[in-house]
Length: 340
Image (cartoon, rainbow, N blue to C red; front, side, top):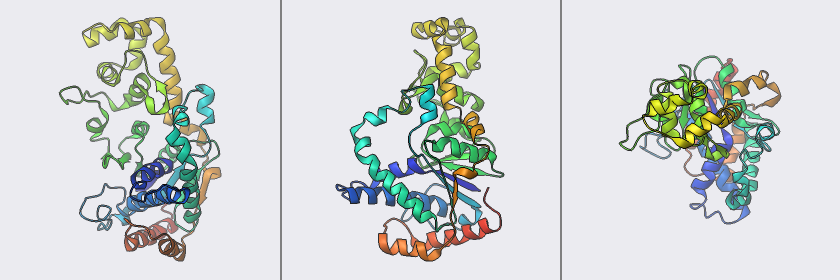
């Protein structure tokens, strides 16, 4: 299996998880919290071969029989700069976080930790994917779709669910679940007031996101089209059917939704969906990166370098022997042509 990790996503999650335990109230401690949080995530996911912790020990019992041996490559992708291409299409894209004082205050420390990790990765048998003013999402999609064999992407970003198929699965580190084609509906479909999932075809997931929007990226959806409404409509017909015939929505829902009907009839819904598709479609974005070589920084396995890092950083929550063993096996796999 090829593991592809969403580096900035993991770094921020790690920073928030360790900030209080490490009493990160100085620049040095904040950077250390982000670095250790990122390292815990990357090393833990590698040792568990992309599986969730089982809760028995440490990070969830990092030592797993046979698990690490199944990993043929590890890629960590990072954002760098700002999402220039998408902001050319929609200037408000991801601007909300830049007006958040918590984000602005701590971004320099998280980015410094990312830089330090990338330096460490030069001595690890892994690949770093990164490009100036390039989003990791696009690089991850290009890598996953262009690889042979099984791929597992680790991220809490739900946009990656559009890539799920018989070959590509998604590991969500916060929810500690793996989403596959077999259980896609269980994890991706919204639930009604009774807790029942409103299931729609997996191939319509992109349109589900385009119609309902994504507040984390400051992308509004179609007026009157929340997640449940979008799921109910898409369970019955493709999204374009409702754009072509605005009266179809009320027939499917069995009730009037004036806000939605007005958006469909006026053409506003069509414009929003077209914009959101262009911003969210990772398969289309991946075609922009048919050659990833300019973005790849491949490390060379230097065990002593990682050993020194353990001594210098004194990380907690990371089992050194398990990590060193997993790295040795990964080095053997990549040396024999395992990187995908």
